Length: 220
Image (cartoon, rainbow, N blue to C red; front, side, top):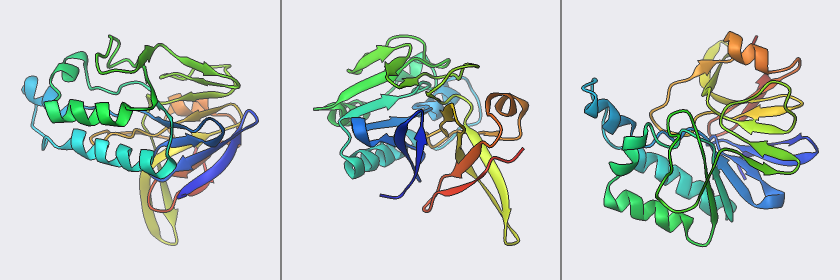
């Protein structure tokens, strides 16, 4: 499997090159910040348009990760939709696609700041999920241990052998993991930003997404 293996709070996890996190012992796949419907929301608000293909592209990559891991439990870690109205704007074939991915699996939507309301697409809708010894929530909290979160869309820039590399990245320290955004149309916050510097402890590392996940010390 194309991933970087590490341990958090005594639990073996794998950061996949796609930006998904896999927990083998629970056969659980976690993704964050899908932001389905971003192009539709921008058009609805009169903002400069984006090609309306991001939901299908994100679903294609999610489907591939589910097939690769054969995960029986899927955790969507908040901001799965760009806003509440984007849920109703999904096309029928997109709703059917999501339903087909949910079939035979436990599917959990974690509440985010973009999508606080109920999601009428099957699965459970929770504020957070505790599966000892880990807790899944959208936004990290100071002082937590064994926490998996998203929200910040972390990105990392490195200079390797004279080349500049900038990619979404996992941020990992002794107490938490912050996932990169999984959605196709998502920006990011650099790891040097003060909010991420405050959250991540000394010795934190970054795992850059891509065909070959690249671990490196978290830039500070």
